[in-house]
Picture 1 (cartoon, rainbow, N blue to C red):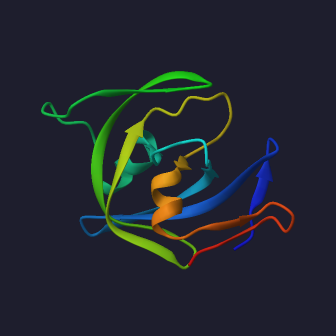
Picture 2: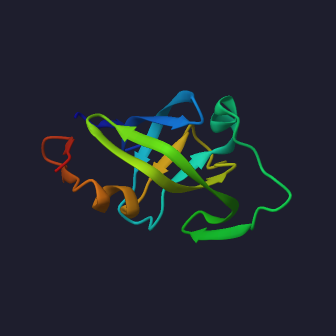
Length: 126
């Protein structure tokens, strides 16, 4: 699968399936520096995902600062031919100063056996 460079960073598109609905997320950053996968709250709302009173709120910390997120288990998260069922993601506002609808973190990349070629600007899944 080809990577698209935006802001000199590697992006792909992803598909989220949850409780009978699906939504495509684009652009989604491939981030080996992120332990977890994060999805945009605005985008996943299309498949009925929204915060609940019983949600545990966490804070992500990174180079861009902190972000408040809550957790959900997706029925399926797919990128190209790679797909993971019952996959836990973090959901947040994702206000980073440029368009981004998700971050594929090391949890997804390792589980799918991703091999990233920066020379060829591709990602393959094992």
